[in-house]
Image (tube, rainbow, N blue to C red):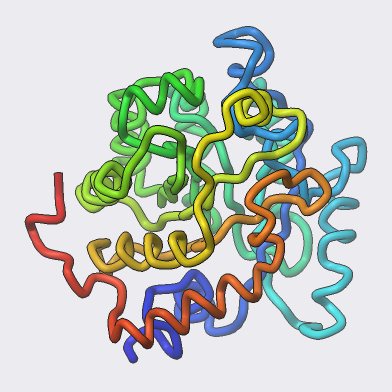
Length: 311
Ligand code: SF4
């Protein structure tokens, strides 16, 4: 198989090719906030977003970047003493601060021995020219990718989830990053209320057309104390069953371009705050089921990718 032992182009494979060895991501909380939560765009946030700004696995933000990194690396370094690392600014919006502060935090992460690059999760509307200039400068010195949470291409869904920016804003951000040779990773959520299989496949077809490096497919999680949780309590909507999710992921990957790297194919919600679906707590079992079903269906990423899979 051209991607090692997996029927899709995994991030692990991509990073091994690039760095010649295993590379780990260490999640960090840079202590930023988000314009969709601080009142600049809204105070509600995206309806699925947890109290920690989707950074539930990061150490607390009162620790310095270096302290957080050391904490995150602790378990890994026993097994992989000479491991290489990507410092992953995950929680909240990691380009939403004065340039001086951004530079200081990124540079601190990059100065830690073993760090070979950084990943920065942000919103497309938080990438003005001054931020892009800084990212371009960093990209020339080290390895960088930027993650954007699109979730869905459909405007009705974007409004339902209170995403707070338009599809054209996303397109501009991707194109601006691409022009500056910065790699982009896009997040999509499967199972959002009101979306059927064709809606989700349409988001994949659209992504096929964008100049991006990778994709993260998330299972929709209902997390405690989120607006989505309130909606779910009042009007329980359909939550994907495991088999349904597994087949949907494979349907998506079959039409996805084989050149797009898969950063994630399952959800990663914190068990303590997960309301539904509870089957996703066993991440290993979900991954095993996905790999087993790939074999049963005798299929792989891009099997049905063609020009008709672009939108
Ligand atoms: S943009 Fe990110 S941090 Fe902000 S509310 Fe949405 S998911 Fe949460």
